[in-house]
Length: 126
Image (cartoon, rainbow, N blue to C red; front, side, top):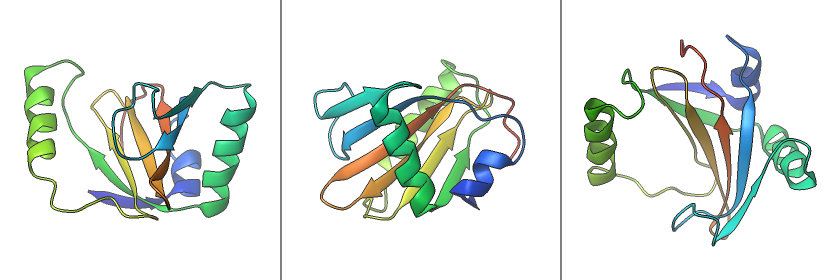
């Protein structure tokens, strides 16, 4: 795990294109029943991005060296789910990316709210 300031993450290394932003409840699924998804050009996308930029959290970055859909990736994700030794608290920010750079950054806000940014794949090199 590495840590990096959100603003620095956006400007270092290869282009990091945000393809979607979720805002809504932190707990529960991400199917859309507890929040909304926004794409570039929508007002909610800009508002959420401006908010996370203003807060500029430190991101706890996890990069795992497995290709999307591989058995290794599934085992790793299952292991993480079973071994959560902390609860996501307001202010906590976690990023999770695979070998192709596909992933997300999740910022926990007060009152069970979140902003989650989903990124287009790139060659991950943190």
